[in-house]
Image 1 (cartoon, rainbow, N blue to C red):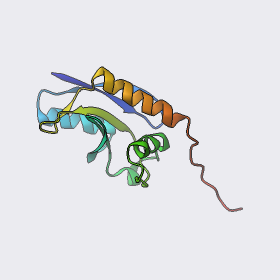
Image 2 (cartoon, rainbow, N blue to C red):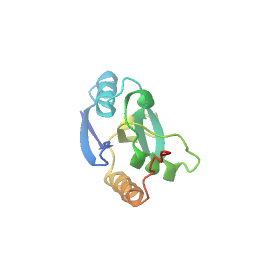
Image 3 (cartoon, rainbow, N blue to C red):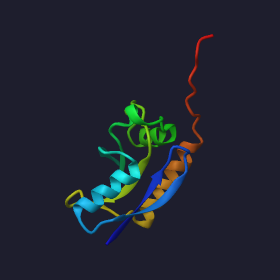
Length: 128
């Protein structure tokens, strides 16, 4: 059995992905591979959608400003930077198990990506 999701990479591209869902351990391995993290964790993103991010990102990867902007739209109080890739998956409301994104959920992710893409990207300022 396969589940499908959407990954956002550091270059701000979206990518459709497939994960092996034959067992909990196979699904967890697929999430780790897609997020490139030994310890990914999920944030509730929108109705029935979670975004998996790298818990160790600040120590291992570059900031993902676009993904952080998408998360801030869902959680305006979110102020921490997000590093590395993000993986959007559906979630079963009865038990919290990751599932495939529905067509409507895929549209919601792409819409959030488009909206966040037009926001200005933070720029580091250095003293001279």
